[in-house]
Image (cartoon, rainbow, N blue to C red):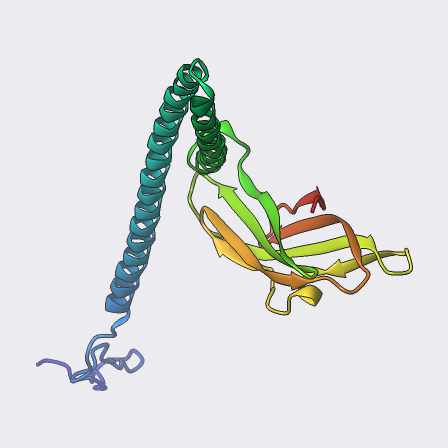
Length: 246
């Protein structure tokens, strides 16, 4: 006769044997297995999305770099042709000399464009050629443009060269060092000159922090100190000091 759950075996000198049911009729299996499967798919999807986004950005950078190289080559060829044209014009009369001066002006403009393009190409090379430069976070450059009446526009460029393409995040601090109206040394934080500057950054390849500032009356800037501190246990702080040349 089959034993029912909780039944005792009669006619035995042994202790009573109680059979407990390990099954739970009517209860659905626990969903732990399916939750685990779902988490695996979510993690894989997030990794794939990040990889695709990083690949597309890198492809866009390569396209822009290639276009800059084409523009650079075209401008250099134009400079060569115009220089030859100047030589021909200078062999003519006074009228041709005026034309030669005009061509020289065009050459100077193109040479400036070539310098700008070469800087841009060097910038993209520093990002896309990790074997040629030092790894990690870098302060690529800081530029100030005068807007008149102690107002300036600033552009701080941060870059990163990394094999894994992971984003870097942290905070940049900018200190303007100079002398106040009494001639005493004074240090002014950029966020005191521009309330919109937070210094926070997060990027994979590069990020520009820009804005406008107004210097205090009588303040004469001399140097600018930039410190970029990434987050993370193994992060390395980078620092750069620039002369104020305006």
